[in-house]
Image 1 (spheres, rainbow, N blue to C red):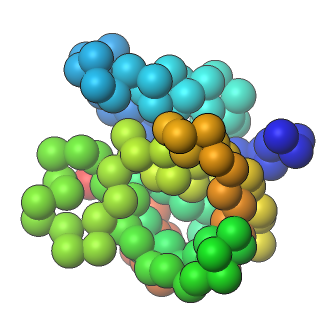
Image 2 (image 1 turned 30 degrees about the vertical axis):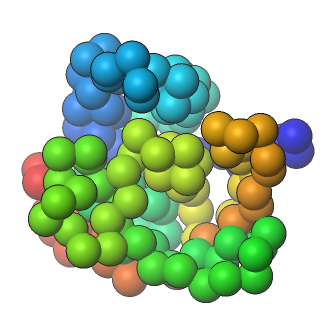
Length: 137
């Protein structure tokens, strides 16, 4: 796997995600552990300090699956919000965990549960809560 790009995570997201990881059911344990690795390697900043080009929780992200040459738009959400978010992508899904904290223009490669590899590029943020002033959502 290629070198992982640096990531930035806001403190409130990091705290909420750690609680989610601590309570993850057995079926989600593998991705929860990968997400915990992301939190450990990430730079944690206050919500008002997160740059406007960083994928945070509840961000609406435009990205390209470079493996399939497919453009997608998804909103990165907590698992409980999937039912109410039409284009939701759970942070406990492998791709969701991979997107967290990335900067627009970043590329990342991640493994699917079947062992295959995927690559994505972050093309744009269509909405980021921190930039919109929603610092405590």
